[in-house]
Length: 581
Image (cartoon, rainbow, N blue to C red; front, side, top):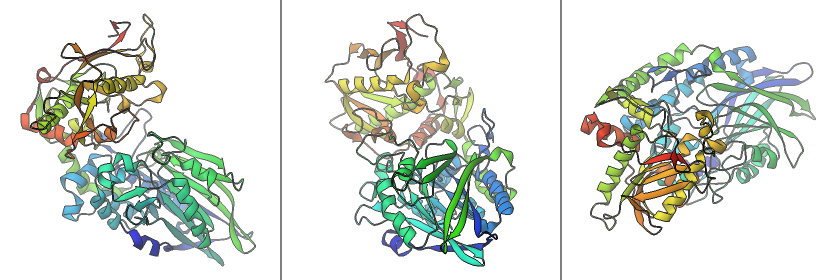
């Protein structure tokens, strides 16, 4: 954090090579933007141990982005271009994990791979995403220090002083031959949800302010410093909604910023992982059109925004703007970035392929969204054991311990035979930590009813279509929580809120006032997904144990993964009491 120093550095300027005005005194400049890179330096899938590929044949990685950036700089002239990123950079792949947890840069002093790649590509500024805070403020500070580009986050302020904890904005100066230079101001805004999602890392240290209010404060400052073009790089989606309640400012406020804050020419946004080539929002104060664009995720796309500026009354004015997103699968990887990443990439590949246990049989997560599967029971077993040991000897030792897990990946598999770190990381793809909370039977029933909205309502006897059975109303797989330690049925013939039947503990119906300890991840406990009761439930265990690492250590200690020791089909889908499967 740079607290008060941020205020002193607000007018940070950087010169580029000259652009040229044509005879009509107009200039075109190009702004490129990536977002949600999530640790993808190369076009590689660490979980599959192969080059990345998906059903749409997207590619990923900064090496692909670099090739595209170099082409655009060559086409438009380096002095006509700028490059920004809208956040979520240092979490998401085993590469990021390795240099945060296995060989942390805070201990070794090694340059973070994402800093190394972005510095080589030549970013002009990057904005903080919510996942930048996952590994704690010391690691984030080390990465910020290693970055040559300024790292922005105007609405992340010190909890003590209220001053910006990171640089709010930067102004880039582009020289124009024979004319006054063009100044491009860039305001960086991050996501208020950090206060929930990384509460353990930021509580009492940082506060995260409303994006619209923050932009209203800083855009006039940027304009007063002579900016001819004002951009916002926002780590926030554009639908105006939040995945949490109303206690925090709006999560996905990118379009609201464009609509409500005068003086902005374009918003380069991220967070939602959508491909938005070009969208226009009318500013309600000025009536002017504000351009928005989002470049998907993982380096699969690059947003390219063209601004035409004309001299009017001696000042540069934006007279035209357009944008698109380019698919990085159309270019090869930049060999310079591939070479730069080689040592750190190879070290990560070696780590994820290390064998940690032998599985008695193949276990697959393919059916986990609609069936109780042994591979998810493995997560439940590890979480239950950890929390049970932690509450032993406490006043809550006599309470039953339940566990919550969700199907994060439908492609995860433990092969029969050797199981590697990669296999385990493919099952548990998030960097969550484990907590234990105390809930009543009534609260657990409410919780399960909320979770069961994940299923479409299907009448008895109607055909079951797996393509439409799950993800009702857009509910993602990671928001379908399954509970172990109790037995229950989910009746998908019934409407949402009336689906949980036969909820029992050891053969006896769960009483409304019966108390349980529930093992849960920090994302859920802090309000992620909006599940009832869990965020206000008393916390009885929080040792900041990372769940994925706990799974790895559990497997390593036992050396064997045998479903006979942990698999238990304790829930099922039914229709009017008749099992669906």
